[in-house]
Image (cartoon, rainbow, N blue to C red; front, side):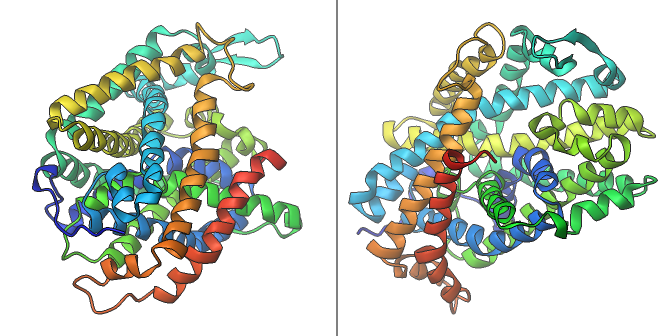
Length: 466
C-alpha cells in the first residue's frame, strides 16, 4: 500500500469548496435524474421506490461516493494511478475504472444529441409537430413516432451528436478551475431554478394532486416480496446513474479537491443536491403525465421523455414554453455529466501519455466521435446489427451499467474493507477535521451491505427482467 499526499500541480485543482461540490453535483445530476429516475419511480410503486431510494442514497450511495473521493484526494492521481497507489494488486481496477467512462461517454453524447435536437425544435416552436406527427405503423404493429423516425436516419442524429460533443468539450479544454468549475457554477444554479420553476407550475395543473399522490405515497396493495426485491435492485442500480458511482469520476474529481475541505460534509451536500433534483424531476413528469395521458403512460419506460412528454406538453396550457424550458433543463443536466465523463478519460490520457490537456482532450474527442457513431448507426444504417441480442447502444449501456460498474464497486469494497482496511479512508476523511462522524455506518456498509448489494445488482438481470 502506497500513500501520496503530494499532488501534481500541473493536473489542476478546484479553487473552492463550492466549486468542487457544484462540479461533483453536476456530474451526478444528469439524464439519470431527469429521464431515468421518474419512470423507475412510476414503475416501482411511486412512494415505495422513493423511500427505498432515499434509504440507499444516504447509506450505500454515501459510502461509495465518499470512498472514491477519498481515494482520489489521497492519491492525487487519475483512476489508473489511484488504484495502483492504493494497492498494486488492485491496479487492474484502475484500468476498469478508466474503461467505464470511456465506453459510456460516446453513447451518452448520442443521447445528449437527441435531447439537443428536441430542445432546438421546442425553442423554434415545433413542439406540437413532434407530439402529433405519425409515420404509420411498424412491422410489429407499433406506431412510428417522430422520435423513432428521427433516430432511424443517421444524418441529423450524427450532426447533433457532433455538436453536443464539441460544446461539452469546451469546459474540459479550459481546465479544472477555469473550465469545469466555472461552467458548473453557472449551469447548476440555472438548472436548479428551471427545475423548481417547472415543478411548481406542474403542481398547479388541475388534477395534478392525484399524480402527486401516486408519486409520493406507496401503493400498499402492490407491495409483495418479489416487488420489494425488484424495487431494491432498481433503486440501487439507479444510484450508479444518479450519483456517478463506479465510473472513475469521483476518484478524478477527488484528486482535484483541496486538502482543507471536508470530504464527509461535501458528500452529504452532493447527495442532497442530487436527490433533490431527481425528486423534482419526478414532480415535473409524473403528475403531468398522470393528468394529460393517464396512469398507463407512466410505464412508457425510456420512451417517456422522447415520445410521451411532447404529447403531454402539447396538451398543457403554455405547453410550448414549458416544453422548451424542460428540454433546456435536460440539455444542461446532460452536459454537466458528459463533461465529467470526458474529464475522467482526459485525465487518464494526460497522466499515462504525459501529453498536454489540449492534445489529450482532442484525442478523447476523436475517440468519442468514432465510437459514438457506432451507436448512431446502430439505430439507422446498422439497425440489423445486434450484439448478444441487443442494439449497439443498448449493449454499451448494459455492459457498463449492469456488469462493469457493479464489479468495480464490489472489488473496491473488498479492497478497502478487507485488504488495505477502512483506516486508509478514515485517515483521509479526518485530514483537517476532528472526527469521521459516520465511521460506524461506513464500516458496516463498505464491509457487508455494499458488497451484498453489488451481488444483487449483478445477478438480477440474469434472473429476472426488471
